[in-house]
Image 1 (tube, helix red, strand yellow):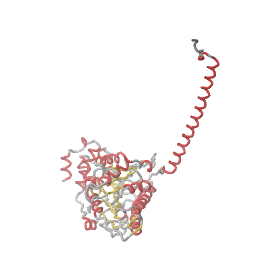
Image 2 (spheres, rainbow, N blue to C red):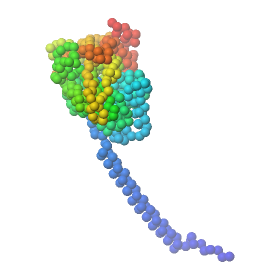
Image 3 (cartoon, rainbow, N blue to C red):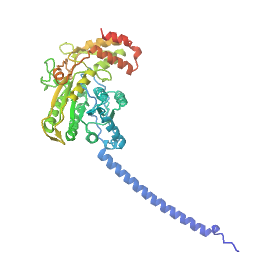
Length: 462
């Protein structure tokens, strides 16, 4: 039987097959290129549309920290803009993220609160969040981690909160979409609003940050709260700075507050008037707390007691201010634990809001309280206590207080807070500073440069 011819060796057929393969490859490449181009173009258009609608504005508005302290020198000028690559709509999506939000906000005690704490990575915010969580309340934090002072300290506070199962959402008060999402996920019973741009003197350099945070940010929060169902009760941080040029002592809630001495004080006074408006129109239950120079562990580095400690240990000179008429500058230094008890007391006695979905159903509670120590101490005495605790003599320069909005004297009358929720400060300055120094040397790892613990204890009792 004859064998079939070997066509694989046919030159014409081989050339034809090669031609067919080249044509098919060219068609496939062209089709693939068109498909790839169309897919790439579609993805690009989707991304452009997404970021156009949702990219958060570059903002230097400050929402942290959470306290109104009088400082004695310029704060760190390291304020940076917050450049978020992803919008809150993307960041706040996903089942895992929502699970964290819900878990952190869920109370563990019967009839416990579900509290949103703004400025949670700040000084008072961290301590307050821990106190609420410890007693079984649900706590969710919100902070933008701005760079008004060293953000690493805020991150360390965040880690402390995380150890106690408190989740801190990173976001800004002016991000209305993020706030709405949080209120949609969690029916908050209370809001402890401590986020703010703090510092009296920095307002002379960056006034817009105070307006953006202390006024616009507060309004943004109230707008979301008024529409919530149910509406939460709100406790927020005003400031002793609102007393401004008031000369009556001790400062009482009935004294005039229409003469602010700084833009910072003016924004806090504006906040009190805004609170009145939202209470009157929308039935929000709102309590304002006027803090008096809060200090203690995990405190703010731009505060006098904090940077005095740093400079004394480093052998740097410190400035001690006198008033323009030569009198000693004194502050009503209030220890952090006392302030936290005041915040919790205000939350516990806050009445429910009377509105629903933005409509007022009846009169709502509106309150304002001083939270101070009721015992003003000259700054020079503060320095003397630190010298004793640190075992180092300070290099002191006594100079006149510049005309920058600082006031020479603060003294709180807290009888109203005592009457309504039993607020009573118990920590004197020497005891509080001892606790602060113990934390400071531990946190910064400089124990060898200060007195031993038993020496510190002895010094504080002198």
